Image 1 (cartoon, rainbow, N blue to C red):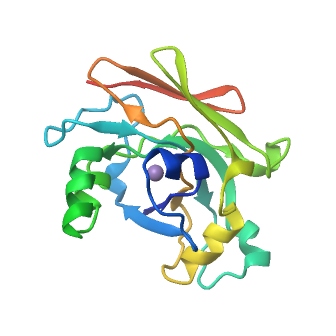
Image 2: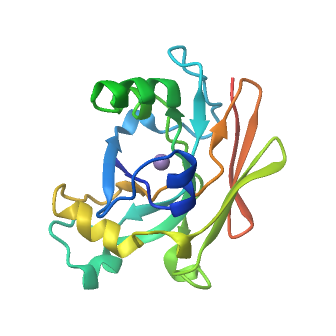
Image 3: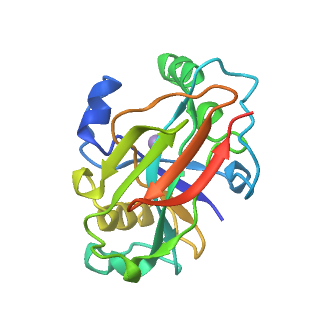
Length: 203
Ligand code: MN
């Protein structure tokens, strides 16, 4: 499986990092080794001094898709949860300034913890999903899917024109504002519609 991640999908987050507004979805990928096994803490990577959390809604792809039309995109994902797109921000800035790819900063081991999935069909309103993250008990990020620049359907359709979607792939859909640093000893708890879907520590 692979993990597809969308960047710059919430206006307020683009502003806080002083990035340009995208005219089409921006995506990158993480390998399967970026998943954090259940029950395991997140090991702070040795190569970075500034690791940021980015709390994001994550879709689960349910069938193979290539060049999926916008109107049929909803058939290609069946579940959603919340995950963290851990980013070595100092390394990412070095990559950006040199015009290099981001992989070192984004795709490293255990950089994509993902919570327990919930069926889209069981949500009250699949178009308006609340999510968030508490860091050491304090709310630091709260997002609403209605604030996304590119919708779930747009993302799935767009990506499938470049990369074939496979059953079991995950799609991180971008972070709202409020990204920040994690430190050794922190505890992160992820929420989907006020329900805890994952809790883990940083070691
Ligand atoms: Mn992200």
